[in-house]
Length: 300
Image (cartoon, rainbow, N blue to C red; front, top):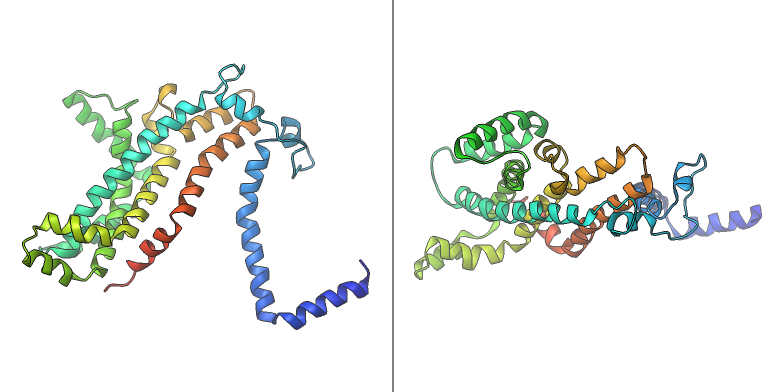
């Protein structure tokens, strides 16, 4: 392209867009590339060969769409079969109950704080949020010790127990879930609930018939938030799970990564499978997420 052609393009853009619009477009392009390129690199690397990934010169586009990495994850006839399907099932066994139980418990706790009057209500809410501010690595040792003592008395094993792992995830997700729902419930007009109670509805009936339908965006936001944490969690699963048959996806990916014969394309394939459901879930529930996360920010 000649210099005159380049100047014509620049002049055309200068006439069509203002400096502020060009600056906004450049910043937006920078952030989009910074966010989307790692996803593209992960997905494209899952189709590359080991030579293409490990070479000195980066390969941005694989020479062919090879499914070797995915066959190693799911094909039992493969010599390096990883049985990744069982790890997906284990992650679902942990993530779905965690999200459902967190929604149910946070609804009851958040409604009590938002609607009922009792002493220490604000202290309780702030204390619940304060627990969430503590890093999970500080809580894992006392939590493990507490559960081990309870297990020795009641008679259950803390290690290799998905139910115990679900409990630990609830300890991490319930505080912020309750805080999110409390702010959202406060935006719902209290007069609607009082009118229903005057008509003969009980408190639980009001929650089920009036409050929950109006709070669907917030409930979806809490469900996706807690599901995402349990789906991606690594540290607690690493401590509480020793059996390979019970490994969740993050632990399995770490095992493949630390294999004596490293296969980075398999790691990228497993990471792609782990990431795509969350991305699809966010895109499908975007409308509920936006409304649920913003409406609770202003007290009605």
